Image (cartoon, rainbow, N blue to C red):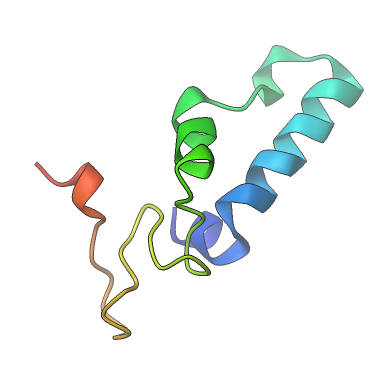
Length: 69
C-alpha cells in the first residue's frame, strides 16, 4: 500500500485499466476501493492522503483515518 501511495493511486488505477482493457482478463479489473479513492481525490503521497496520511510531513507512517478502526 505504501508503494501504491508513492506511485500515485491515480497512476495505479490507470495502469490497471490499460491492463484490463488490453488483456480482457478480470484479474486486472481495478477494485472499487481504488476507484472510489481516486474519485475522492485521495491519490496517495502527492495529495497528502491515500492508504496512509502524509499531512504531518514526518517519516512515520500513519494509517489514513478511513482505514482506522
